[in-house]
Image 1 (cartoon, protein in one colour):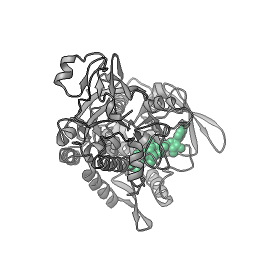
Image 2: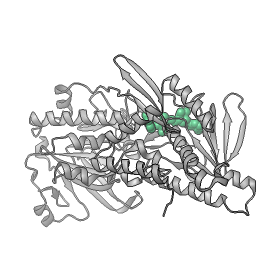
Image 3: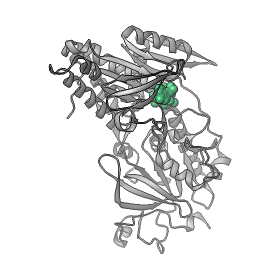
Image 4: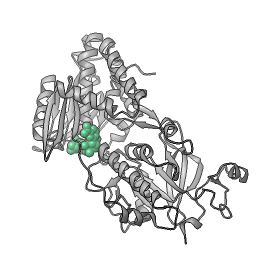
Length: 481
Ligand code: NAI
């Protein structure tokens, strides 16, 4: 049947009334059965997520051509490159959170946003099940709502991966969301304040002041660098008797940190870490985390050691979020990768119709990088804009239209950057067919300029710049309420 013939749009199974349906052009009655297409011929494009991919679509789509609905349990876009710096107060949390309603407000008042988790999908009815989010981001059971889509873009992103390591979920902090950064700040503050008590033993003080980072990817390295800065630039001033006792250990399973970076930058980072006193345990895998100790195994010798810790931050990799797996389970014969949604060169979710996916919840030849998701978002919005120009409202399968009229998505790397602490950063930038590598204080200036440039709004750029000036003048604070 023609796509137009279907009742398009969403139905709120809990609250919608026929009065609401009449007043609101896109809310349908509970049954949806007799409601004509009230969308002025526009298709409903549902974007799941408010991360790099979906937000880029929102910014570049011709929103007058679609009924755009954004669904995410997070009502802001998070500028993730500066998340590690929020854990130690170099940057304030709100500075890197851009309210999604601000972004929507700049595009069109007709775009709808629902703060909710998409928990299920019925592909035959083109229907999504939403659970409203609670303050901590968990689905609020009992507030289930259903909405319809014509086109669905899944950009639900990734979450931390414990690889089933015992004790990690219970005892470790993660570094994926703003709530994680606040939790780390609280743990650091608690450990330092507790260690200042006179009646605790030296061994217990050493344990409390031992900060362990698991994972030598960019997240772990950047966090370790920021942590070093907090200790060297602030704690030495405010709690000198404790600062000298604080130790940072970074545990990495592979022989070197930053496996995706150029070897020169890997060695530079490892040298710098050694110089600034970050203890590197490479070739070492974390086997188990208990309340006060972690167990590591040395790959070369096979020996296991117990290490006492005060704070542990798990940055050992990511995996796709639950909704990606829910969708995979609908087409198990095609979606066979446990890492996420298999997509083709047109970002179409294999085995489905009119569903696209991008970013960290997908499996493709591209790495799970913010710039990949962002470029995919640009590509997809361009494809949707093309589709609108070509008269998308006719009964044409959206997936095939995109495939025939648009060139496949090709990722073009703009390079990699990472802050490594001590006012130094590393960069690997494409230069014609080669890449140039750089590391040091100048690269750190470049990294900062990149962050200010890439932040999603003038408000965010100004806030971050102000945070950096405040930090330079008055130091950091890890106070938490
Ligand atoms: P990652 O996957 O890049 O690194 C995780 C590291 O943890 C790996 O090197 C792995 O060997 C290690 N590991 C895993 N299990 C372990 C265990 N039990 N014990 C010890 N080590 C263990 O993860 P990350 O850093 O969270 O990055 C995720 C993605 O985001 C990557 O694609 C990364 O390139 C990208 N990213 C890039 C950034 C940048 O370019 N500045 C910043 C942050 C993330």
